[in-house]
Picture 1 (cartoon, one colour):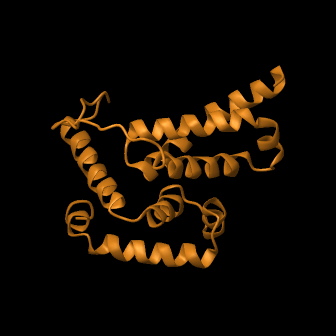
Picture 2: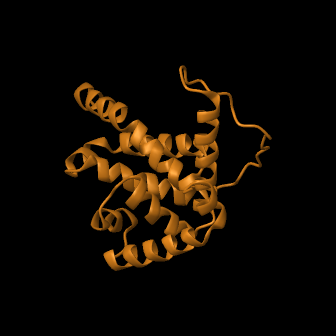
Picture 3: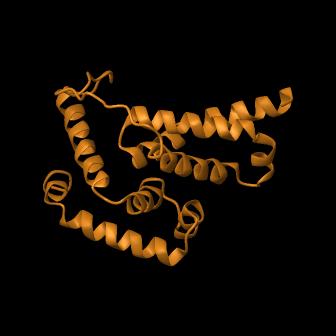
Length: 172
């Protein structure tokens, strides 16, 4: 790739990195996995950047790669993880620890509820409501029909509404 295209990709990646990590986090529920998925997606996009940039909407193209990378994550060998009993220290200055801890707890409850959904329902909820995509954009990202997006969203929201931990903790 020439220097001009390399610089163009670098600017695109720096601008879109937080958004793609947030998307991957919604799909995976883990910050480390999210960064791995986003990194793999950007590596694939870099390898074919001339084609990606000609696609007209590189953001949608890379978003699709993130969704596909998340699917591929389940096909690879998994490494067992050891979970700790306490949340990480807060690095946010000027915010009370209790506020940070409550937001962290709320986020954990939400991510746990999302993880109880099936992969397709979770992807629909994350793309539609977390990433604020339209039904058509979500359908394009998941390679399915708009009707499928609507039905999966409806079923997922019904499941989330039945989750007493989610309703009792996050939405009080």
